[in-house]
Figure 1 (spheres, rainbow, N blue to C red):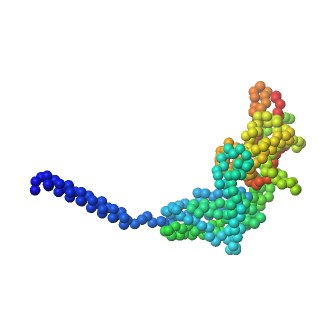
Figure 2: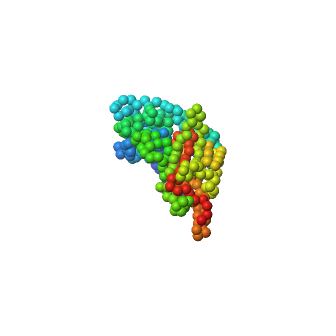
Figure 3: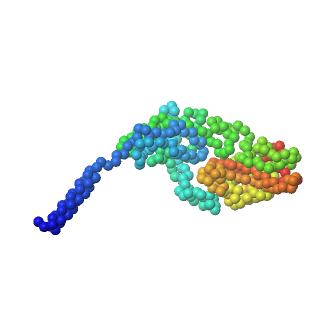
Length: 350
């Protein structure tokens, strides 16, 4: 056999060996076991007692430690019950709730545009994310029919499952708090009764007293957040800001001359009178807890600032600011009243 033929034979053997190796590897890969789904023994809920405030939608997220459980997995609430063991149909029956179908971002130009982004759906008032384990208590849950503290509330179990098995997390506690329709609140969390007449302002800066000539503090201003209900008159979902002097006479909002009334809140159809400023609103306020130009940095409260400026004794201009960071959870006609109780603000120059 000459060298040329020997070379061809060696190449052929090499190719045949390479093909054999590839076929063997393919066969081995074909028969390798698939990754098995598991429900991990180390997976657990990080919170065992949930205390949502009724009347507002509350999301409990990041409350489940995945551990070695493989996803996707399924979560389901089972056996919701009152503390005495009785069934809790108020947690299992479906009710109409408002659900966002499009994202709210604070740029909407009308109440109608906001309302078009949410839709009525029928759901349990307390439900679980089917693939996350997160809980939601919807705003439509009320203490008139849902048990709330000081009642001991409810117990429920959660079933976690996938093709690798299932596991139960038992006796998780649900202990709702009574409605507090606005924040900051003067209501007791358990009894739902007011514990003071009003709340404090969030900002009181450079407001000099007209009589005492001293700068006013938080203790000089009472803030009242109240719902206006008129017999036989349907609510129109508005929000009005008012200011009162020490004799409870109205202060003209125009005196807060440097207030940006057009961007004070995410409201519409502004009406300014000598006694107040009113906006058409979409409730709750904020509509969603996301940061916008109308909210605090965390998005949890609306941020309002009323301001004016005047010349002080040294000729320098002083900008006075009165502000409130707040949330209102119930629809209706609401007003926020700033009442100066010890001295009136000085609007004139020194």
